[in-house]
Image 1 (cartoon, helix red, strand yellow):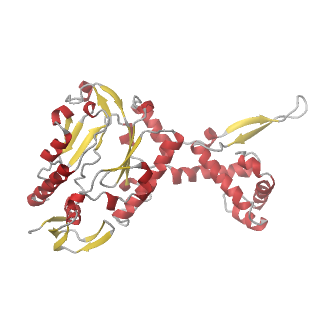
Image 2 (tube, rainbow, N blue to C red):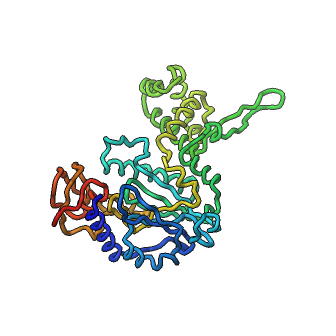
Image 3 (cartoon, rainbow, N blue to C red):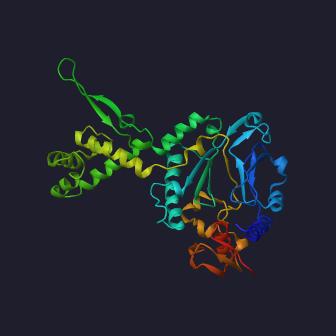
Amino acid sequence: MQEQTRAYLRGRFGDHYRRVEFTPPPEANEREWGYVPWTDGPGETMVRHRSLLDLGELGDFLARERPKHVYFSAGRYDDPGASTMSDKNWRSSDLIFDLDADHLPSVVLGEDSYAGMLAKCKDALLRLLDLLETDFGFEDLTVVFSGGRGYHVHVRDEAVQTLDSDARREVVDYVRGIGLEFDHVVTEETVGGEAGRVSPATNRYLPREGGWGGRIHQRVYDLADTVREQDEDTAIETLSEYEGIGEGKAGAMYTIATDRFEEIERGNISAHTAFEQVAQQFAGVTVTEQMAPIDEPVTTDTNRLIRLPGSLHGGSALAVQRIDRAHLADFDPLVDAVPETFVGHDITVEVTDPGTVELRGDTFTVDAGVHSVPEYVGAFLMARGRAEKGPE
């Protein structure tokens, strides 16, 4: 990045910081703060181990320093400005989740557009929130667009604050479905039997709701509900598509789905061994489709620094945007996270990496060379290293 480009972005970041008001995180004075200044050269320098006492009033600091990136810690400390982690004296930490589009299994780098990557990341975010809210029952959640390639979720429920890294690793494993054993989500119940005459039977049940077992049960239920509405030949054809299910087993499953559907509703996978076979197949599919591919080290690190909502991302010139949970479905990062500071006038840039840019609902195709573009497009291109500031 050329000096004139760096100076321009730093100045306009400062203009943005003078226009906006910040809501700091809870207990902001107990957290470590860090930032990355606009420095010369290809690398970045992190300034950290600062407290709010060191920085001063947050808005004034940002308007004065105009940093490229701004962070605060998940952790709270007795002395957040101490120069070593041991001297800070850790007290508690929020539980942080980071979803990065670059790490999603569904994203194909080089093929998916930036907008497409972010759309897939939002789908993963919704899965993560379902796991956190439904399975764990967390209530104090803050959802944030990172300003770059994904989303952050801050969990601040009291129950998570003093979890150590090992306990947070267990949360990670659950959210990612790591190590899920089918037998662990199944319960057994002894039924029937008469002393000396008939041996009791053991029924195996999936939970009707809640957790990975509930998700697997829902798939079994949906399958049974579908085939019982079909004619027998079609149902057998449907069921025979599953591994290990031949015509005989498929016929037995159809009979149970039509005559004993209430057993499927109850989660009884012992009604026929074929139902348990299919349920086991559903377990792997369910994890693959409904797990949240979070960045694991972020969640397990009790000292992690995370981006400040309201700040600008130096690699995109987009805002790190806090999102109201009720409005998440309608949130479009390439519209809603465009800073108003950069809207309403054009600038000149020299494009070095041509291509398309999708912002504010429009698609811009920029060729190499000098062009006049809306400032929010130019700021995005320059921040991402695709353009330099041109002459005005």
